[in-house]
Length: 325
Length: 180
Image (cartoon, rainbow over the protein chains, first blue to last red):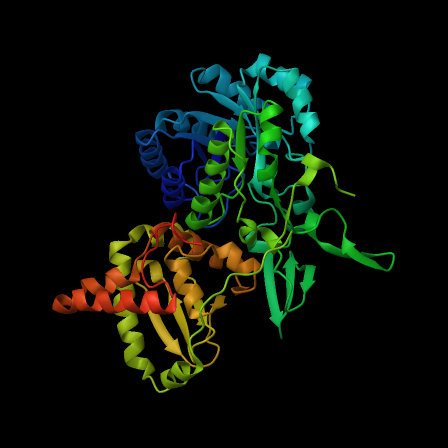
């Protein structure tokens, strides 16, 4: 199986390559990618150099251009596709149907992957993207169980890629506007969910308040892990009860499900975390590369040591095992 | 499943008390000169800060008796070491060893933050931009010190390496594959 790793900076890309990543995904430093965070991403020259470095070491690079273009500003997204091809990208990861059409017509030689932001969650829609826009691979949303993934693979020739580690988005990706209600900005349009510009932390005697757009989303005690204030993982009070309405602040770790995902026909395993450090990228890649190498060699899965890298210090297998309430 | 936090070395209280007598003005001048040298070698760090390249940061090593006010100043950084809480738009606080480990790629910033070893206050965007820019710069503070130490470079590096091994504090750039 192929390991697809994040890189938010050129240093992280090099770390991923050295750690054994088969493929690295990254984005340009603008609103065309869904991780448009301060201090992250690549200018055109950095992208060209990064791709050359990866290719020299036998790794591929995918460029995520996976936000939805604004009417009247399509040129920004069109230029990104064109620059991805001229930089030597092995594929672009797209979400918007108009941009897919543009890329298919104007850059037919540039391989197209469907972003998770397109929320393609059944074989019919996957096959539609393949037949109409020549999509070769689809990144499946993080709301499917392993049997559901197997069912999709049974009905399509398109390669599938699934998330196995990192931040866990529990919503219909590309359709979720929760972040907009508190901040006016969303991953779909601006490339940021719960943008840092709207995040504030206040530590009073060890009690940490995490606010988003002025709203307190979490309040945790001295011994508790610090959360990032996203609405879908917020702690709310309703009907006299306090709890996490949608999901706890946990991260996905499906390393133990790799053999089942392999049997389900999955082509590639995706690691989330373009906003994380080069140290994180190297460690996660090293662990997952060891796991898929063990799988290929018919050896047992190595035990992981990745939990401390996770949000909230806690992990889940998410929807793959459907143990959610 | 939940895992325990990382163990980050703390400066012994005795050493922290000794540092209270340190004259801060010459220390500020020295650190400014040192930061400008780093800026010259790593211009990309300041480019990556983008709109935050004039933000005033407070770096608060919580086990030291002072804080560091740092202004990137568009690539001409200014450092001022002060007692008290310092003034700035963004504050990053944590044990000295944690902050040095972040610079050298020994720790992941988010992991330190989730485990409460690192506290961010004020402008979160600016703090993230600084963290990301430093992570990309692949700095090695020991190597930078050695380069300005002339004939003392070799023994100095040996001493720093000894301290690093004895204390577990990351004083030089780490191989990402070997840490954790």
